[in-house]
Image 1 (cartoon, rainbow, N blue to C red):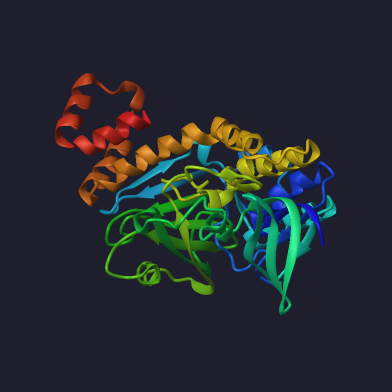
Image 2 (spheres, rainbow, N blue to C red; image 1 turned 30 degrees about the vertical axis):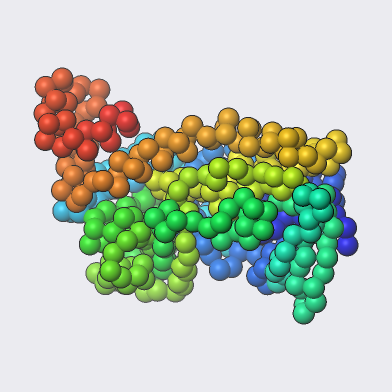
Amino acid sequence: MKYDVVVVGGRISGSIASLYASKQDVNVLMIEKNQEIGTPVQCAGGVTRSFFETLQMKPPQKLICSEIEGAILHAPDGEKFLTKNSLLQGYILERKMLDKALAIKSAEAGTDIMLKAQVKDLIIEKGQVKGVIVRHQGKLLEIPSKIVIGADGVESQVARMAGLHNGHNPQDLISCAQYEMVGLDIDPEILEFYFGFNKAPGGYVWIFPKGENRANVGLGVRYGANSAIYYLNKFISHLKGKIVELNVGGVPIGGPLKKTYSHGVLLTGDAAGHVDPVTGGGMHLSAVCSSLAGKIAAEAVINENLSSSYLSRYEKEWKKRIGKNLQRSLKYRALFDNMDDEELNSLIKFLNTNDFKSLSTLSILKLAREYPKLFLVLKNIL
């Protein structure tokens, strides 16, 4: 086996990168460690409409569980704020089917897919990555390639083996747990988010409706005395629905890696830190960055220029597209990290009782004096 591009990871990032590379008629192999693409699920399944716009695809109706029109934010004290901001409008997708559908599109474009295969090492010659060493069906295989794209998630082995990352700081990881539940009495068009130290310390709880009284109910935590599953069980104890699936995992929220390319290597998706530091969402960011990774990797092969300087175009391009948004979210995260429950209660109350366009100078000064951290958050948002 010999390929132009090897993509490690068969989730959304890997399938998109493989698809965009294969579209340019280069030989692509996508390697997935699990025996089935799409399982286990590692996402709540929510995307904005821009996700499919980025991929220049129409959202497949068979993947859409529900169409979302807004969200309710629940303060620690129980006060609620309903918003129908256009940025929240989008879809809840059946994530297993989405991953498989993107892999199928990639295969139809020409990508070869190797399942239940573990990348054990990179082939490196004179500082240049020249392929991967894979354990597959009990054998070690050397698979030469011109470029390797690491789309292997938060614990990316490609990033580590390429010398681009040595692991995340604990404070930059959020531990998540999610149940799929049935029999819930919820609005099928509205997301729900719950905040508070007792509910999800350092994170939040989400309810993403999937239609027919189904929903993904999950949370992420960054600190606290107990595990994510403990807090999730505590939260759902007041719900009447039944559990039909459990998924757990970690999400990197420390922002993108300092460098996402090297000689013969590109990183994308969670492996590159392409995750929003506030929400923990990464699907739209993956769509942007992974399509760029596949496209630029193929161009490097076609132009016979696999150097680090040529591949640096990838990092310049994704930073141009999403870099400012990620830096802004890091700033917001730092502000939210310093807010306690009282200030979160005040934030929801403020959102409920104020029209941003008609705020008086006096009310802004009063807010700044009584809740300085809350004022900083709103100052940056507004």
